[in-house]
Image (cartoon, rainbow, N blue to C red):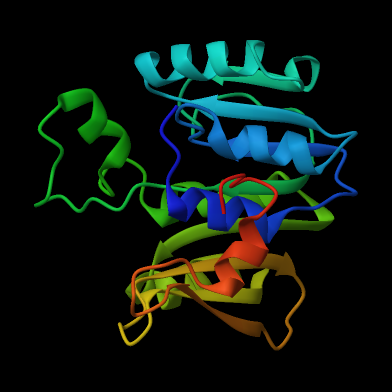
Length: 216
């Protein structure tokens, strides 16, 4: 299973130990769902994936994990899947491919294109599935933050926390992780530098992800 820095950062940052039900939208091969199950000892985790190949890998990863009895794969399109419960935590780590930068493989392009599931298509539905005291967490390019906030506010969601990620000391931020909750508030903004100028992982990154990156 491919493990990306972005996914590990998001999963480590957004953990909710008290959650009973967690939803991972677009789980891919299941990394975030596995991280959520590891952090939330009593949570049941639903993971939705549209791509058949990725869903098969996620199924195998779930089956072979210590938390297999709490991980539930749902094959389908999040916009069409019938969900009958509210979630304490909803996570979504979409891939950042615009319409003019497509994956050469059609099935990957489907999952990775912003044209497939733009924010306006999934954020309102995700908020509708969120428990009143729950939180929705997603990662997106820095430039997409304002669009996310505007779309969320139309459904009563507001940014309560934001993690701004700089890939290396001295480089501009490229990604943000945003936590949405119900009720207007002043968001807490945090910054994370992934690597020092030398290329080694920063102490902040190692502290955040130490439970998942055993070699750090």
